[in-house]
Image 1 (cartoon, rainbow, N blue to C red):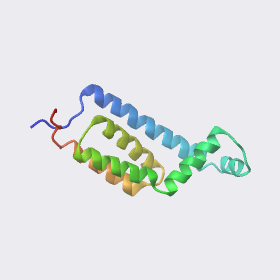
Image 2 (image 1 turned 180 degrees about the horizontal axis):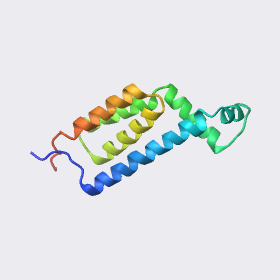
Image 3 (image 1 turned 120 degrees about the vertical axis):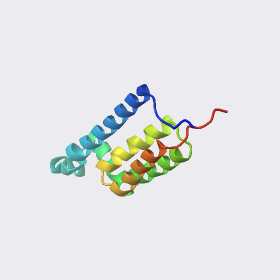
Image 4 (image 1 turned 90 degrees about the vertical axis):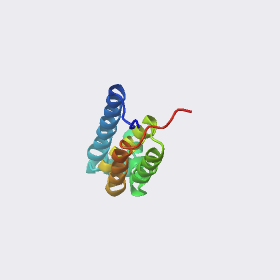
Length: 124
């Protein structure tokens, strides 16, 4: 019985995906969403890429899209583990943890950890 464990190369890619998602989420939260000057400027009608990113991220985390998406993809990965699903769920969970979707994103992280104890899918 071979477990679903990423190789060292895949682990490095997963680390890059996780840290990149975490870094972008931290950038959005602390330099775009929580900055009052940027909030006032965007509310006054400033049309920049930062204001658009702020508006999209705010809409998504208010509707728990990051947490729900991370949990759904992590559940799919738990049923049939693949590296692509693992990477997408990891990225969404990292963004959700920073952008206020803590409960669902932490459940997704738990499912991702449990998926490492699953058997590798058999080749067809």
